[in-house]
Length: 314
Image 1 (cartoon, rainbow, N blue to C red):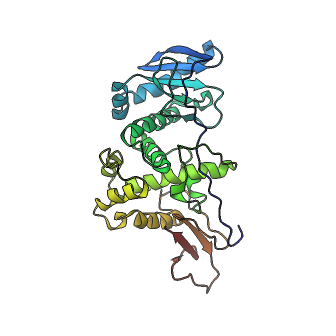
Image 2: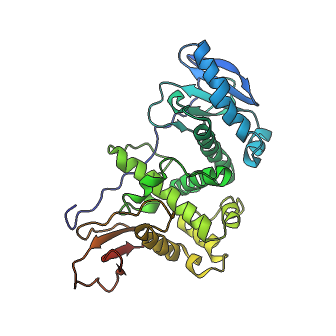
Image 3: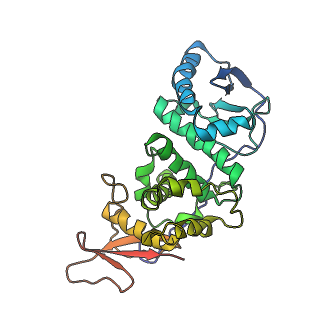
């Protein structure tokens, strides 16, 4: 990328359906308390076998999770398998309902590859539903961060796209994934990177800033006057940890760790660029320097890579 070029940030989201699934939607059965539907052709014997194995096992795994129990106490839940949905593996919207009026999530049948991946997918989408009930005003990137972190909290596994979060640190952390608007990101690598880096940051915050204490604070329904960075600042201020005292201080530490390879030990490092890149708020970049060159005063020198890290906060 040429010096001075600004990465054009696009708001990432899915094309959200805000209506009740009715036409061409067929009831399959009720599995572990969840109403299962398919949209389109009737379910054949081979499809039913798949539902009864992969999906049934994943539903059995999540049904006793505390947030799922609370959701079911508020009303029955549904899973709609929609082969026409091509934008992502699954999605949820607050007004999405099955033909009987139950709150629902949509899953693309192509996502039913393995029970452990489907389990994380279900946790992710039902967590959106649960989190929205408590904090409907939260910014989209926080909503997505909570759902991605929840996959790790409840399974011990990272989202399958977490590696992509290292690839484009120049993308602004807090201006993506706005779930209240429709948009598209043409570059699929960029789209996944936007998604992955939010997950990376929330997992890093979880590990650095109090673990489950941090996680539980993300659902504080009493603190409705704050959201986004302001809300996270309030959480961090209660940790009594210097590196987690504010959102900017943690973001700075997170940014350096991405280039050092210490965000998730054993995973990727964020790549070094050949030259400086102009940054948007809450983004970072690192560029190589030649022997004898010096970083600017506001930059951080990575000795092992002989590179300079540039971090923009506000």
